[in-house]
Image (cartoon, rainbow, N blue to C red):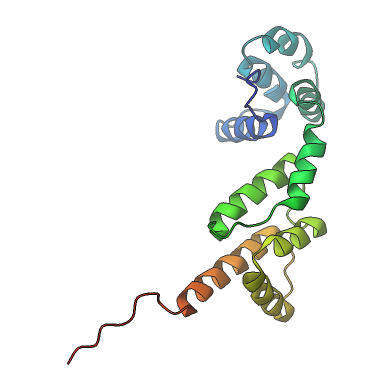
Length: 169
């Protein structure tokens, strides 16, 4: 239900596109499928407005209708201020980061996204990331995530165990 205050219109569209592509649905019919996927008070507006539009125009109009005021500005602020928490894994952080990129419509090779991902890492991981990426420049967010995952694994593996080893005689 797109009327839900907790719904995210960008994720809704992404999930709808995945389903329609999997069903081999014709792109020209996507606006009609979108209109039929909406329930609640937005249904009448969607059925009257979306089916006659092209897919790109229908999506933009859908976002304009269902996104909360200042949604993009608020998301942009969250994107530029996000930091990986000490208790968070790279995987969990990357999922959150990719969600923000999706909402902001950032491409995988977006320079701001690559920079922001790096500076959002904890200092020790960030230092290792910079050193590792100097040998082989990172050009996409997927490459950045893979490198951070590798470094996280290496960092965890090289940390001394908090449990002292047991000596056998």
